[in-house]
Image (tube, rainbow, N blue to C red; front, side, top):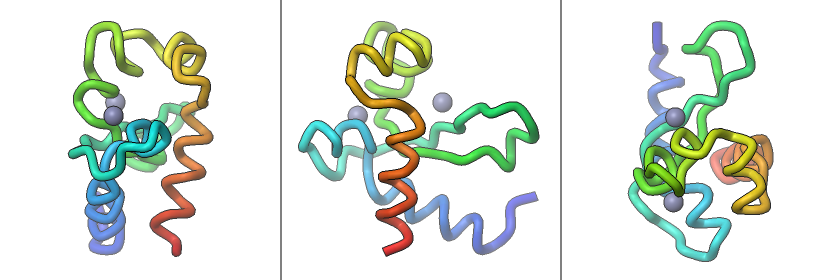
Length: 91
Ligand SMILES: [Zn+2]
Ligand SMILES: [Zn+2]
């Protein structure tokens, strides 16, 4: 179940725009929510915003390339993107 405060948080996160585009200097790219898998309950997994290109593109995205290649390609880890996202919404 998603609580009201979680919904509010999801809204804030998606309004940030893609976290990887932001890292590359392009703020505000429309984003989808990507769940970070750590084992455990999916609904409790942390989320980061990623645009369709970086979320689902065949050779440009975390799902298309897999996390390891994605992190090598862009020089930033999923966890670092999460840290940046969390610090932005907690401002
Ligand atoms: Zn992006
Ligand atoms: Zn995803």
